[in-house]
Amino acid sequence: MNPSISRRVFLASGIAASILGSRVRPLIASEHDEVRSRSQTLIKSLRDYLLAQQSPDGAWRSQTYALLKSGQALTPFVLSILQDCDSKFVESVTAARARSWMSNHMRNGVLGVADPDVLEYPVFASAFALRCFNAMSDHDAVVDSLRRFLIGEQFTESRGFSESHLAYGGWGFGGPQPAGQTGHMDLAHTRWALAALRDSGHRRAVADVDSASEQSHLSRTFANAQHFLRLLQKHPSERRPQPTLENTTSQDSTQRTAIYDGGFYFSPIVLAANKGRIGQTQGQTFFRSYATATCDGVIALLASGVDMNDERVVAAKTWLQQHEDWEYPDGIPRDYPEPWGEAVYFYHQAVRAEAYWRLGISGDWADRLVDRLRRHQSPDGSIVNRRSGLMKENDPLMCSALALIAAHFADRQLSGIPASSTATR
Image (cartoon, rainbow, N blue to C red; front, side, top):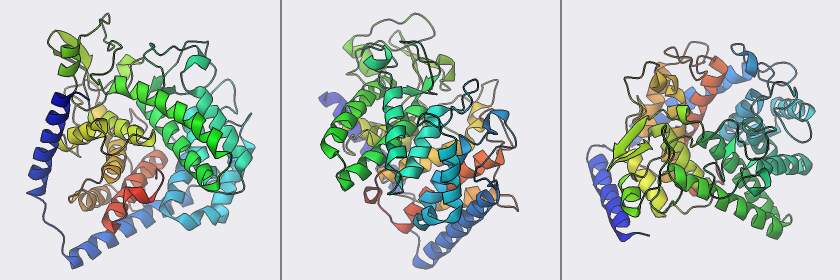
């Protein structure tokens, strides 16, 4: 590790911690109990709303977007967070009905491909399905097929990618692509795949199910993912040129260090998806870091096995503490013609809450988050993004699920549950 980078990161981290710590008043016991009660009430109302939206056949379907009406993507997404919020829910009739529906709609061990002409986010659907079935002890065949699919979807040599390719080690929407072509690919899909694989690998290692070969295979998958994450974090050790909207050019070590701030951008392939726009320093053009991507990135680092004290994790944590605006994702320009910052409002709440909890960031963020979510809630328990539908948060099913994820991690923080007590969620 470059000593100058290490010193800069840890010094900045200390400054950020002292600033944050100086303005947070610890809650007294009665206040804490009141906040926890509000948190539990919020979670219950969101859960009740989502449970009421389940179709009789067990699926959750969008009433807003045609692509999400089949239920292949939303069913595992909603079921996963409901299971996370209540460990006993996995044994319920409701959960069993949803798992049965998913099993019946899998094709060749994959969810999201029931209609070969209209794929429904196969990596997203299969990653959350894996997390749902992984909670059961009697679905090894389903778990194995979903794991094989996700590992096979990673962009590596088996898909026609060399280590020099900018997509190497990442994931995309999933589905058939010619060798060496990605289709849409980004950091969020990479994070979801890694989290699901980490969960399933943890369970099988505990159960000692062919653990030696399983862990060896997963280790290669995680190492390849870290190769991808190093590019998106603009780490000085990365030798591949950073993508730009212009022609890419190589950078020397000084230039690589200059653009490294610890944060992440979203995709080295789908350049228009990078909501932080372009930055420039020392003659180098690069995609700027922004909050939601940095949260995705640091969660992905942890899911890939990077230690909490690793310089890459510390740098990302420091970036988040120095860009702590929960109302608007820092790094996304406010002068966009399209309201991208508003469009990811609830995704930002969910992914930042998860990142803060996993990183052990203290302060009053959890009780503030609970109150913020409650202000957006409708009488029926749902939450909808009324400012923008660009990222489908105007769908009450999608948005309420995101809000429940945020509330879940806030409640874990308020309950004092450490991140080390669970595998990934």
